[in-house]
View 1: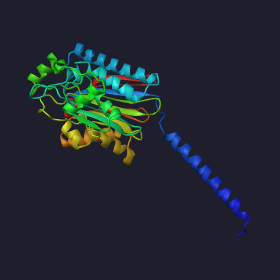
View 2 (view 1 turned 90 degrees about the vertical axis):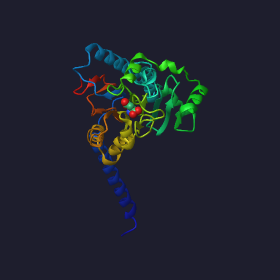
View 3 (view 1 turned 180 degrees about the horizontal axis):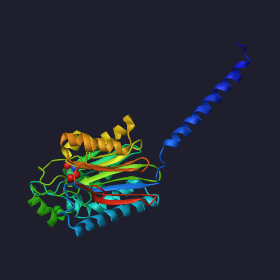
View 4 (view 1 turned 45 degrees about the vertical axis):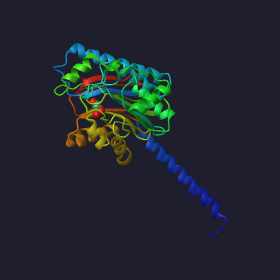
Length: 334
Ligand code: ASP
């Protein structure tokens, strides 16, 4: 080939490549959903609650609590706050509400004590923090956040977690603070009637960052020292900006062995599933076949939710920047 043609040829090739990549980009853009500016989903536990046997005033009481927690988180996001602040605030609010099995309303162990677990994870950097088996930290979710932000570790347990929480200035309470008539009665009737109400939240902020958190008193009548899925990153909590944020609730031993939260993210990342498909597969197929009861709330990176449970109900709520809002307890969005 004649030398003078080289530059022309190179320019032509570059032009064609540029046009193709433009075409690719607009093709992708056409198929991507438009992200919500922000979104938040939360749960207050899954269980065998039954529409017929659940008195209407009690349903309203739960729905009101779910709705106010949702509003608190949406307000943070609306003002441009970070998803981590929204998640911590929502979970603290639910921990302070004795309706739920977390913080104040935590259930009792077989020894009549309260041992709580919590975790938090940010999807931007896959950073995470957790506390397990804590007995005197008023808001375990804040301790989880402190472990993430103010220690070199991911999880602190028992006494050590309490000492750390006190050192970083978190509120320590006498263990009697966690005694509530309702959880004590449910402890006494534990075998036939368990209290549900682990709490969890996933938020997407205006910067496109996902955060997920979970807090629980664990399973009613659990053996002392038992740690569930809620503080285990990948089992009860997971967040990754490439895929989704997840918080789970249910029989923790199954969520740990089936690595539920991470599995949903992995199905999205490696199999290209959308968040609803992935959550359905894990909760309604894999967990059901395994005999594990429970549910999850998820948000994908566009702020689209999945709220899936294989139990009769799951206390849950979702809202976003477009004003969509759902508060429900039972299946069929009731
Ligand atoms: N997953 C929690 C645990 O096993 C309990 C629950 O969500 O109800 O500790």
